[in-house]
Amino acid sequence: MKRLAILGSTGSIGVSTLDVAARHPDRFRVVALAAGSNDALLARQCIAHRPEHAALADPDAAERLRRALAERGCATRVHGGAEALALIASLPEVDAVMAAIVGAAGLPATLAAASAGKQVLLANKEALVMSGALFMKAVAEGGATLLPIDSEHSALFQSLPRGFACGRAGELERAGVRRVLLTASGGPFRTTPVERLSAVTPQQAVAHPNWRMGRKISVDSATMMNKGLEVIEARWLFGAPLEAIGIVVHPQSVIHSMVEYRDGSVIAQLGAPDMRTPIACALAHPERIESGVTPLDFTALGALEFGRVDALRFPCVGLAREALRRGGTAPAALNAANEIAVESFLDGRLRFTAIAEVVEEVLEKVTIEELACLEQVYAADRDARALAKLSVARRASARGEAAE
Ligand code: NAD
Ligand code: MG
Image 1 (cartoon, rainbow, N blue to C red):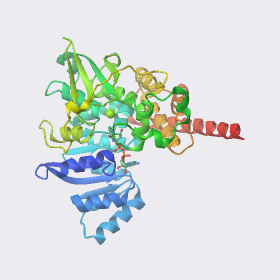
Image 2: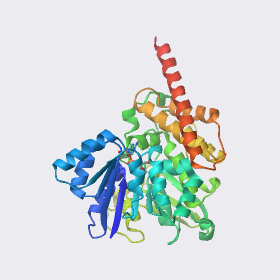
Image 3: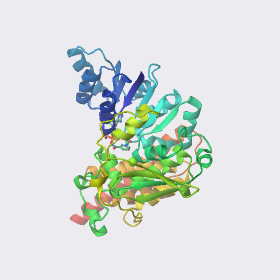
Image 4: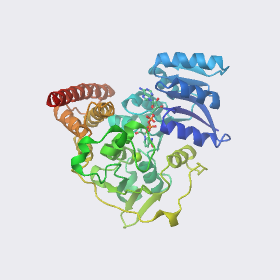
């Protein structure tokens, strides 16, 4: 029986994780659920799954959850406040932690799970992007096992030799790998005329052609910053140098990524675009279990297409590669600036094409340091957020003046 804690249980990945776990009550027990502020959904999840612990980062929401569960006679212990999430992630009775909080907010709890030596099922790519080498050090020192949830990284993991360990030095070299190739759908604006991109709406940006996901990652897919973050994620998960991480645009999202070996072989992983496959793969690793995903019907697939990334249309990919090249606190700054820019775009305060402009401006202005401790990551995150907010405000007021 594997005992699970799910961080971000009310989100897209969290809900899919509960769906897979509930298909196998003989294998998994949900010990703890945690989220940001959605007390109504967390209450329903607690009543259905009866975890010992539940936590909400928002203390008021936690109080509402406590009352709701007491009224329903549910004995789940409720914890409130951001610190409660790290506590949930390191409970001694937890074996595996699904890290599926979105954004930098997930870093402390994801790190806590790594330091506590848990099996860490990593969806929260931003945590790894921000803290890179420090995160991998926490995994090694804590004796944790890292299993990728991101579909591309799960695909790479599945296309690597059995027994491949994320984070162990020299693994790719030993496996005879020449390159890893991340596939990218190109999102909803792959073929939109470039001059129309500045006028696209949040509603259009979150309407991903192949995947149903949270709003932030959906916008990241539309700008392809998501692929940029995934390049950084691949660097740390697989120990791949930047030049050995390629991107192939593949609009159908059937091939989820590929490993190219020294001898010319390319091994790919295919499947329907449904996150329950990578989730089930990590939950049961190294076994295979039923996930509820509809099998691929090759006769109905039609043609699979492949192409290059259009750097003009998707400047965020180059910005992320550049941040990885600069190293140190640059990826943390990139991530923070992007979070502010995406939030501002979703709130209608920033044009879509200005997301990349804000990130680029912040990366030019922010001080980049070599990474020695976690405090630097949080400081870079704070500084980049402040710079990004100024940049957004300046652009909003310039637009206001232009409109007058
Ligand atoms: P989502 O927006 O649907 O859910 C986010 C979850 O995080 C919610 O449970 C929310 O309550 C919680 N949360 C938000 N802010 C919080 C805070 N301050 N403190 C604590 N909890 C907070 O997002 P998602 O699509 O499920 O994505 C989650 C993570 O998984 C992201 O890092 C994303 O990049 C990654 N991911 C998602 C997908 C996907 O298909 N959805 C695929 C690959 C990777
Ligand atoms: Mg992905």
